[in-house]
Amino acid sequence: MGASESQQEGTVRRRGFLTGAAGISAVLLTGARAAAEQPLEERELGAWLETALFALPASGPVPISRLEQALSRARDDFRRTRYQALSTELPLLLAAADATRDHLTGHARERADALASYAYSLAGELASKQRSEATWVAADRALAAARACGRPAPLGEATRMLSVALRRAGRYRQAADLLLRTSRQLADDPADQARAVRAAMLLTCGYTCAHYGDRTAALHLVDEAQEIGQRISYGPGLAGATIQATRAQCESFRLSTFNKLGTPDEAVPVAGRIDAAVFPTAERRARFHTDAARMYHQLGDDMRTFASLRAIERQAPEEARRPSVKALTTDLLYSSHQPGLKEFAARTGALKS
Image (cartoon, rainbow, N blue to C red; front, side, top):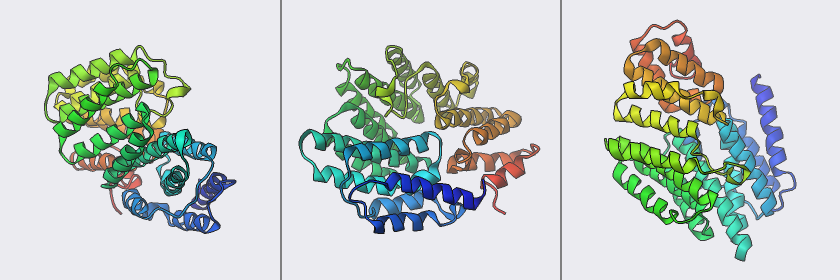
């Protein structure tokens, strides 16, 4: 698809998002278009999000149903790794969510708080992908909205995002403690939603423990999450969860954990048990291939490392342009002469022309 066609598609999507959304002015529509018309390759998503979070566009309240539709579309963009499109939509979604919940009371306000929390958690996910400091801001706002709504699922997602911000800052034990404390609050709740949230937090916690070398805790937490996940039916009611404790996703976290523990040889049989095709989203498939690339790179297998990097690009081109993946590509570029590697590096932005 050419650049002009891509911009036209983006304009159509923004019109669809705004059509019928009461309270969103024509001025806001113009602002959204102007932002999107910047050449995509010249926009740095992390900086874009930081600016957006501190200067959200003006918006009035919208019907809850419209907010739910907009959040669903934004989640779909994330899962399909359409991060450029998501970065354009998120500021408007966040502004509308804030205006809507401030306009409501009672149960309607709780619903709007939950949607706002999910939206800010999604912003945190995108910021984290770009190694942006905006993760802190998004996670803090997500947590405040989650506490206001009092529901376990938004609280779990927001807590997990805050733990990611802590982990990225090197505060590994504090991040793990936050996840464990919050997960204990849900331990006695038998509802699938609460169990799903708890399992996701335990998976993240296990990976976090691996950052400070606690092998026993890390693997135990992944095992515990997998045990919980086996008793959960992941249907439409749990669609809001970014991480689902299915067998494949738990194995993927086990792979990540062995990588972080510095034992990639133990990760090899785990990777062999995973069929990337079973992951329901492009974002999760790309995550698996990223972990596989890191595993092979630690093992010194340049050919399989590059094969995994190419698999990321096939599944999710925008994932291949993430800072951490570009760093891995650059590292491989300086140590290997795989055919096509230079072209891949140039195509994904790891090698500047």
